Image (cartoon, rainbow over all chains, first blue to last red; front, side, top):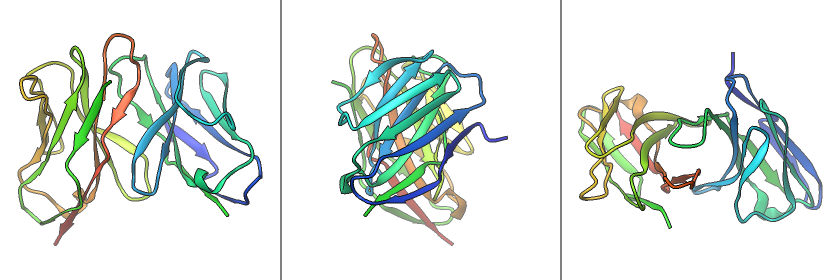
Length: 113
Length: 113
């Protein structure tokens, strides 16, 4: 059983399109995250939800919009895709906010052409 | 603000060599410190952690000690294996309501047979 799953694993699309990435965790955690990893492996948090409430919203273009329909799901919708959005996007979850281990999904490699 | 500095990679070692990957941090209070490992094509997974000064985290032969006086959390392993080849991330989670991980830039380790 996969603890944190993401779909799709690969996403190739053209500039200007709108796309979504879905994330689900079956660990019963109450906190979920989206991270972006660039080509140099630099990892940066984008958003965090705790009990479906947005608690971290880093400096991310408002073309990116997270949605958490319930505690087990956190989706990421991206409007008007740009070349610079190409990266690997990781979903993660944890139980609680402070000092908790985070469990990462396998990542979604987004390529914008 | 909080920050994590890791040694630049890549690090290339022969099998059974001793490994050290340096990590220093800047934070107020007493953050929790972590090492995560990312194998090729996968998400990050927790390797070890320490939550207070002088704590030693250990797992799979890897160790790191939380040194408050030098603000460091260096990762060590006495004898690396080819299977340890991966990217290693040092991270911290701060206190006082800063509920987000700060990751280092990652250090790629390549172990040669």
